[in-house]
Amino acid sequence: MTIRHRRRRKPMSEINVVPYIDVMLVLLIVFMVTAPMLTQGVTVELPEAPSEPLDPKVDDEPLIVSIGKDGKLYLNTGAKPEEPVSLGYIQDQVAKVMRSKPQTPVLINGDTNIDYGSVVRTMTALQAAGAPSVGLVTEAPSELP
Image 1 (cartoon, helix red, strand yellow):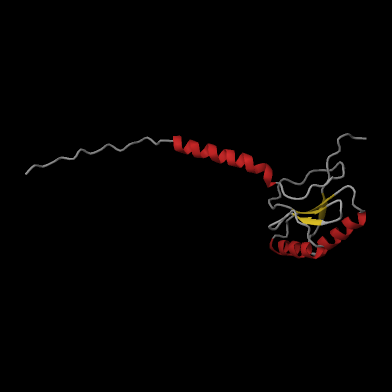
Image 2 (cartoon, rainbow, N blue to C red):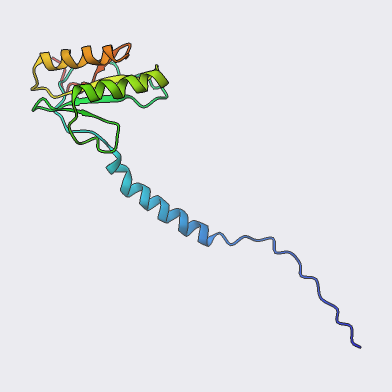
């Protein structure tokens, strides 16, 4: 009868980090490629106006209602933010958000060439849906007068 003595292996105190670095670099590339695609909404030509930027303390992502130059309305939430929606649909969605998060900022992103009446109708509908205040998105002027 032979007794075999097993040698105890000393625990390895090193971690091979090369696979983790590879995974991190792949994730970095994926995020760099997808980040520019995350901008939602419709392209509109914003009017220029000297104004203050939004308060950075606000944690909630703002609801942005875009009004295209053709007068169609778009909302930055939902499955397809690039498809036009009705004013009634926007009112319903804004009312739902306001019930759950009443501090959510609501903004109108209107094209320079739309009529003032479209903006006023949209603001009135948003306030009726429960938005305490509605902001207007503008672009900083390239040159001051």
